[in-house]
Image 1 (cartoon, rainbow, N blue to C red):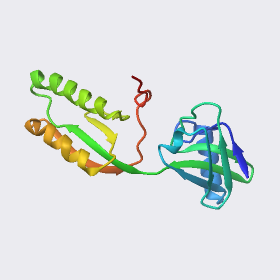
Image 2 (cartoon, rainbow, N blue to C red):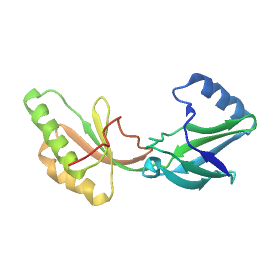
Image 3 (tube, rainbow, N blue to C red):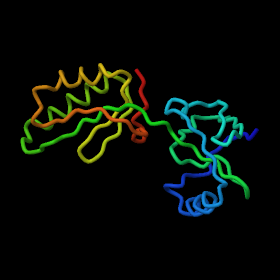
Length: 171
């Protein structure tokens, strides 16, 4: 069993790790552990890689595990994390022309999503958050139906990684 208590880095942000990953992948020395977004916050868990290596995760603090994190590496093996994709709602702003509508609409969306207590990801013209049930999507569409000219609300499936700090919520 391999015990993991720290993240070595991420191949998306560390060019040296990316080079090692490319080499190890080419030589079939990479393994993956698939976890859910909820598991990414656990301090302790036990998983197996796609090649059946047993891995124990033991962290002192929330590890904030990310997709493509490298959790183990030696000369013969690299183990990476892969987050499972999940169902998400995608709210897309279609138009910014009516400035008097966009600000109040943005506040209403923020208020509604805040009440759901969900992490979010904000892009240039989208707000993305995980769905717990398809009925939530229908509820959002009803709530914002009078803003169809400005919004498109759809569901999708993706590896969801919230914006930094957007999953912190306390009352």
